[in-house]
Length: 171
Image (cartoon, rainbow, N blue to C red; front, top):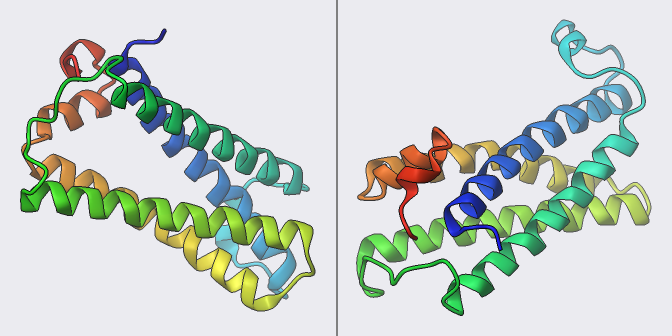
């Protein structure tokens, strides 16, 4: 079994890479299909037919979500986790959990709206929901990372950023 610290680092960095890949391919799809004349900055976006790549990255997101759920299951069963250092009733812990739920909500809206666009008709309203949820994911990353770095979790956040498994601790 992969150690807890390694799982945490792999999950976080995989999520970041997938968000960037999906944003770049999705932005190319948007520019190619919705705009009459692409802006000059669009030349740095990936070129070609990117629907297959965008869909592949979305499927990898679904796999990553399943791996995260497995990780949470293992931690709750006592495999590779230590008891929480903060009490469940603390304001900081509630804020952290709320931020994580916001991330789950954005990711869920993004995956479901993308699935609706792929399987259903090309509805403009669904495309708008998908686009805004996608643009909010990078903002969420900065919010989540900023909170973790500014809270008592800074050593663990630093270990994730620097891929330092040895400094992440037993949790």
